[in-house]
Image (cartoon, rainbow, N blue to C red; front, side, top):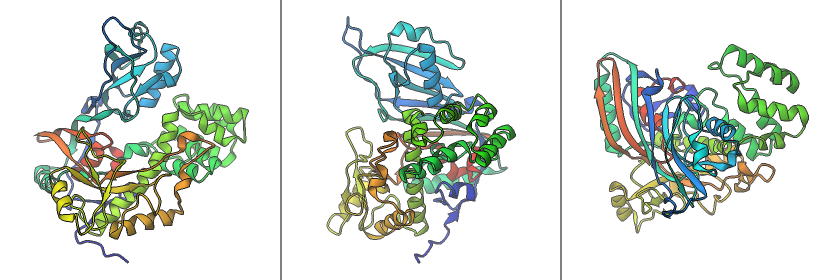
Length: 443
């Protein structure tokens, strides 16, 4: 058995459930609470906008800046599609945003600008409207800027904060765990659903999403989920599930009409939501890989023999689709590049295009990655799901360290205000957990 590095601090069981088993920093936590108010968690997308249509021409797509208070992105798209009398596929965005906060991002609409100007949804502001011949797709952003207020801090938190900050600055960022939002902050079941999908277990996937009560939901919702698990009576559940459980109601209505078509039931959900189930399972596997690397005392920023390293693309971001292996001939050069932020040591996000011959590291990191894949009984082709195409995922490599940019903070006696920017795909909550070491699901 591999040895555990000294001073590795283990996380609680809730974080371990989503693969975040350890902390990088060994300091005590500052405690605290996030999102006491919506305005305590502000996210502004650093966009990569499409070019405007030429002067005198109206482009096919209407592009706008959308600011939403307390709206999860998939639900927002659903309500926008109703307000605009258009299909959900006619609304595009670059990144999924969390519900609890105030978020600003670009969206693309396959409608005329005047229709967008008439939208009236509570907590939603639409501005900076222009047209373009190009749309916006998932991933068409550079990163996000955050302004986050932490309240209910431990007395004397400043010393612990400064010590943690020093450790993370030495690292050059923080461990790039997939954050709790990837799995569901209220009910972390997305990775469980995704696991069943890639195994072709569609009934289990459906029941994991519809059932699986968690204590952070209301007693009414938890009881409705428990009753459905016990009876599988979809007609009764359709009446007992509250109306705010939009996607559950869609699934239940379909199952009332098609009781045995579980794959079809999944296909009724938004494409992006189904895709996120598989991505959550991949994120869980990556988190376990990251945890084991930290546990063994392997460096995250500095490469070791056998590592696969990502170069940076023209935007300065890690190129997740291309990598090269570290060997005795290039390790000194790659180490210098990594220290300058020109290359990133990576971990595996396992999918259909990664297997033992392609995309898996060698050396100690390869041992870790293979052990987790084998323990799950996975092969690459599992991530091709013809019955539910949206659940298919090809896999990538992901940087182990997320750099923190534009950092500043204001320390008060009872609260802390942090401002920083992260590259796309990196989670602010994974950064904050290193400081707080509190219940991640209270974030």
